[in-house]
Length: 87
Image (cartoon, rainbow, N blue to C red; front, top):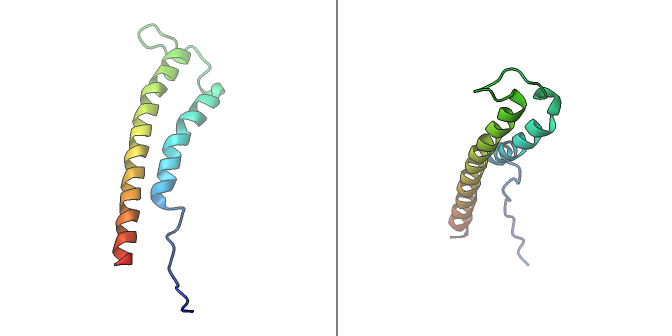
């Protein structure tokens, strides 16, 4: 039997680390309550505690979009390399 040696791509890559950071950042920001449990500075009369959380809703959306785009790009690149190597 001929032994086939195929190099496997690493599971942890810089792109996947960035994807993970984009998805973890909102959780860390919201779980670190002592960083935003205050009234000042207010924004349009809204205490910091509230507008900070609402800002993270938008930030989380943007970070999730970035993570999704990076993940899709990484999957397509891996698939293209796999198909190229099998030819």
